Image 1 (cartoon, rainbow, N blue to C red):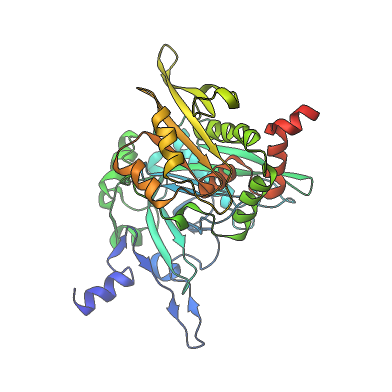
Image 2: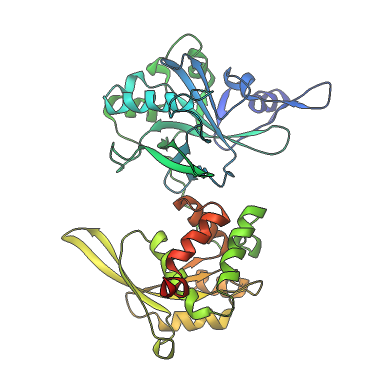
Length: 394
């Protein structure tokens, strides 16, 4: 690639490319300027940025660092589903009266979706923020809604509480469209109004004309996660997992109830889940059933659960082999641990194709945060509701 082309790509002169890093411009004082004003001609601050007016936006940019524990934005690369939280993140103001008008923009866009006015929806460009050089990664072109999500669920006002003060914020669901590049010509058209659909990406045109979504789906091969990838990385997440570990220290049998509750959060359609007796568990701490399908067009699949409340020590080959040997024909296993699965044990699961879902420490924290338990205080309340020792004393 020649120098001129490299410069063109790096500065977004030829458009935007999926997963490309766009660095900030180094200033004379040594600091870096936000690159999005140069890339797409929007302001240089905030999670919500837009062209046009808040009532008639011609282009919207959504940014996230995907690291806010209270507001866990999520991009599922396997399905193209993007969940984004609004900007009313503290008590004291109404849902739509925020400084950056982010929630107002969400309401405008989803109203147009629900009214069938897709041609009036502006392009929505999604970027993730990096910590170095004020850089951003382009994550894709988004449209409101997602296949299978009803209009009553794609934009939802959720309640939060801070120091006893309650307030609402939006939780919005988008689809990242299957487009690898977004042309500079189409982006620049938004300077004077809504971009012309004739120059739009094909997946965008299809959505506008028919309402059909073509998500950018990139299923990951089943990988052997490293120990670091299985453990929490920031201090808040570490405190959450330590809160659980310390709660059940010396009480491994009681942790089985916690692991079962986590399994129900993970597998949304569990119909029943029963803890086994410690002296007659057959190598399985709990046995449950999950429903696949809907109503009469459904079947129940049985799974075995193994719970390991470990600190520092990983789950080894012997524990994994024990669970695998207890999984019966047409069943699968769920292994929940507050630590990690050792490399050799993980390798055995993946390379031999065993039907085992691994839920490690980082998964537990992410699952709790997605469900609304983002701080140790909230996790303690959740533990109080499911811990056998607590519930017996109530």
